[in-house]
Length: 122
Image (cartoon, rainbow, N blue to C red; front, side, top):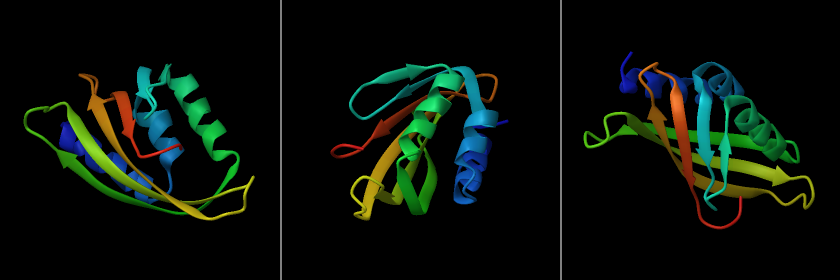
């Protein structure tokens, strides 16, 4: 499979609201996830749990996924732009969050690294 094929499948599943299916089927067992503040989480199960913890105190009103985008200088990577429409349960105040993520695809066609870029706290 090509990085373009992996990226397109990734975006297709996310657009269908199957973000956790992506993590369970497309993430390498040794994936490293890097948040915008630099905090790293290693391993597929811990990365999935981190995401479950993050969504547990939020209501999701919608998600827009743009991409995937590719760069010939980094042929093993693709980028996705996310817009998240959420309501934190603690505040009840609806907010829009934007983030860009870079995904690295390994030789096994699984995602080995994800790195998020965003402004402010997430």
